[in-house]
Image (cartoon, rainbow, N blue to C red; front, side, top):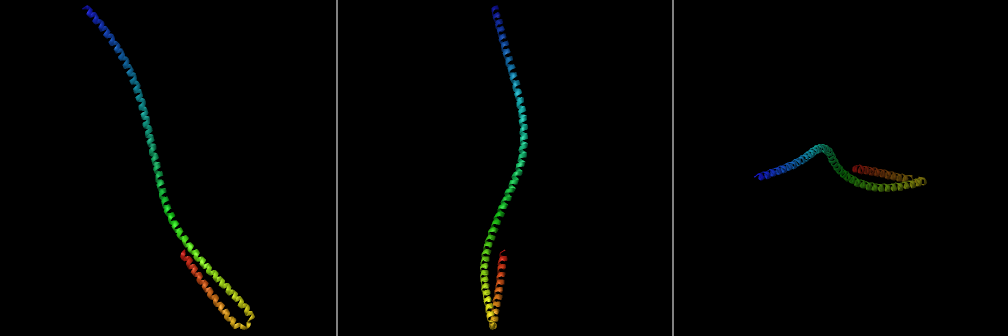
Length: 185
């Protein structure tokens, strides 16, 4: 039995050494895990600091974004106002073009009417020149024919009457031209 006890004591000693070796291995594992835990905690603290910095940056960017949105709203409002003003100007431009086209047509009509009037005036000038020529001829004949004074008076009377009629006709035409011109304005 003593052999059994020795063997048991040896086993116990062996078991104790194994436990001490296992305990030492566990201690090393615990020290490693504590070192890893410390490193992990250090990493967590660094990440928390980074998170705080990123949150601060996000707040700054959010504030900056808010300010930019305010500024952009002003520009969008200004753009909208400018677009509205541009639309109004386009409408006004269309109205002005319509008025211009109407006035252009009216001016064309007035020019045509003035051309007709000028042709009539040129015709009347020709008539006046013809009458002047006739008057000159009559004056020459009057110098030659003092004897026919009565006949000459009648011719002068006719010429005077023609000039008065012509003058009245020109006055009437002048009135018609003025009426047409001012009526079209």
